[in-house]
Length: 206
Image 1 (cartoon, rainbow, N blue to C red):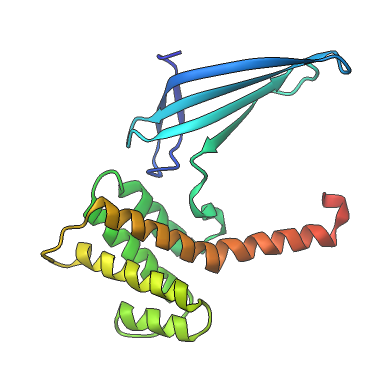
Image 2: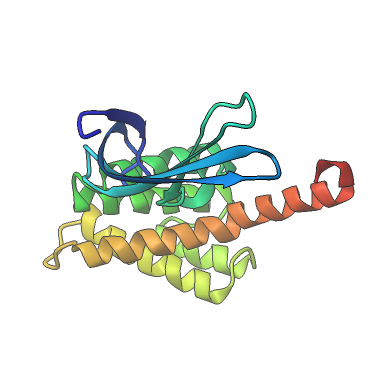
């Protein structure tokens, strides 16, 4: 088990890399009515790039011809990147990729993601500070999300410009948390709502 390698995209650092299996537990449950057995296995994986942990679930039952199903239970995919505008998605994925490499680079890429959000939302201004303020005035984001955007911008400035204050892990954690909330509010949540509405309009889809 320890020598088996799994290749997938890491939900922590965003890299497509190998994972080591660090622990595994499985159990089975027999169902008399269907005369079949369900098997479930949990694996603790570790990313070889950032060393972050992941929890994988494998399900299989011997009552059919289906292949085993594999699902990552932790970490949950960041901000459902497929719902993001193309340029925003690109910068956001780069932000996640460099987190484990450089806190300064992560701050810079997060700031660039915020710049792309403002550009996509047609927020005008010669500086990012003005663009975020104009985005707030447009009613596309509420005041609390606007505060998150301004705080993310300030943390990004620590990485983009020479500053006496060092970019810390606490800075990065807060910045990424705020950035994910902004992306969720502007793009991910509306896309989820639209998908549910579409399914409600078509009962056969449930």
